[in-house]
Image 1: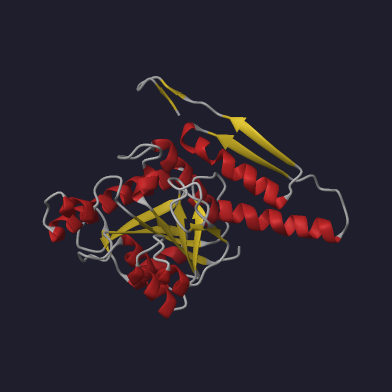
Image 2 (image 1 turned 180 degrees about the horizontal axis):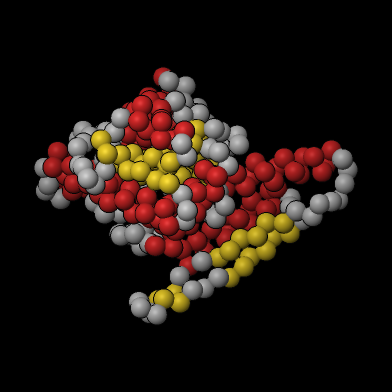
Length: 289
């Protein structure tokens, strides 16, 4: 593994899939399966997840809520998401424990850095909920703080897009993608990857941040690094073997990523791209996903 200990930051909105609110079970299961696979490769994992799919404090204050109360409601939303993710991880054979930034036993255990590190070393996924426990701080800042505290090798920010862009690529088709960018550039350009407090904390503590698309099954960053290494070796040996193919299983929640995976395949110059359709029918809700 490239990293032995990671802090994975997930947005609450991503759990909603194509919807705006709630938790999409297929997305939740896909995330949990990817996380369990990483842990089985002897990587220690801590997770901070947002609560925007349930309630966002800042939006609440704009609607008339007191900002402090609104942020407290947002903290509770992150706990709900954390409990759901922990349950899914356990369902897929992993070990998970929810820690909270404020006392909330028996829902979760009060966050303690040493206890978290101890559990991570034992192969338990530690989900750190409740943000920093204070209003006016985002879960991005919480993820930066926790990454530094637990001595993570990297902060991985899983989103619905495949990297850092000059604008939201889901809204602006002309958004420019950056292969790499410094903290200073990101702050000066006011890129909305993370807030400036989180950026500053990462910069001052030399904590690298990697932004990747969590919605591509198999983890996009892991996919890129593995294929690139294989292609480089094959080119060096001047060999046509092994045949290298990317297989992308298309669900309703990730079908918007087809263009991204096609571009990736072209960029890497793989031998073959296979798009597989997988449609599951939910008889209870009369829906496909």
